[in-house]
Image (cartoon, rainbow over all chains, first blue to last red; front, side, top):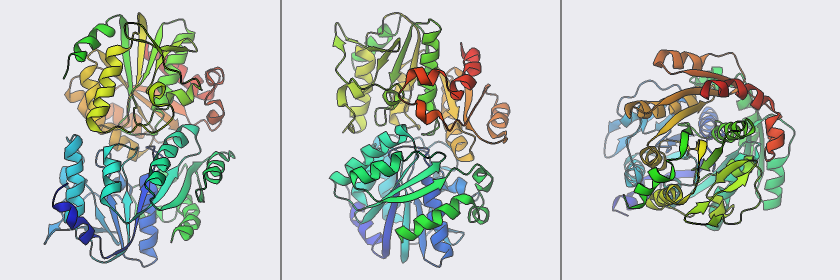
Length: 241
Length: 241
């Protein structure tokens, strides 16, 4: 590791809670949960930051409808843009909407750089949109952000649960605080995820019904606030905060 | 690179077509499309191999209901197990259903090792279940398997399309053969993916409706063959073969 890692703790010292939204699986709605959690908390008057650390596949900016990719201001670090009341940081400000031509250590470097330079100021919540899977990026972030709690997202599918289970095994082994499991895109009455949570002694936070009209709200925070997704999520949020 | 890479071309020399099922995004049904393509072709009498190269999040074995994780036989290389008529190879035979504690170069090594040692014999089709995203593993595989064609899977979502677009940009830049785009989990009438394909001059192969009863067929090839998913997929397959 390098000297910047010592800066990371300092940068996050005025943040009351750090919640990393994670899943062993991609495409389960991790970015949506992270963005909606940030939006919801911001509307309730909290100071909120949202950091998209899915370097290869950032999507929070699509969900929030960000089209201004101008570089954030530098001032003893980088001051995040403010979007719908949320302090927001993502790799898209540096790469635009193009593929990030980064491999292995470069990704780790970008993640360290982001954490070391971003001036969040005082926050009630920093929400982190984690990369999918349990690859190097995920493991690096887990080690770099020491005081994070983990909110784990799954869909009601055996395939998703297989991957989620692997992530939870790692988080548990590292003795990290796991807030619980959110079940997203619920379309059936199977109790797969609930049963798993009970058996393995994780907190089951509730489910969000599959919302086929949600796509029309992507890119518009005002519309997102009024979706069925957000209505279901509201109850789950109460258990998180 | 090492001496094993020269072996890879030899191992794949008796395979008529290699189809890599890829997506810039996780959770879009890549493994399901790969497994169902393999099953469908095998039922039609073709010699088919299925190679799961999603080392961090293998799921084809869950879809095919594999419970016997005993090591494949070694004989001048490794002979893949035969599952429902398909020659199948996955990391799960080596790690069981536990997280693979591998980082960076180890993953590349495992991928090279797999490709260099597996004795596929004569195949009409080798279907490859690619890792999600455009990280190191994906780029390594693209470089290692020279004669592959690419079948790209997306869901009808702006977020998924954002990631899929990045993958397609890379494939196009490398001048690799792109069979076309499959739209999975269709629930609405939005023509997002079709419009994108037309605009960017990719072949749109068709859509598969969201099938909420599909989950009950996961783990059973016999049931999978009779799902709505497979019925929709049949028409798409005709355009691939």
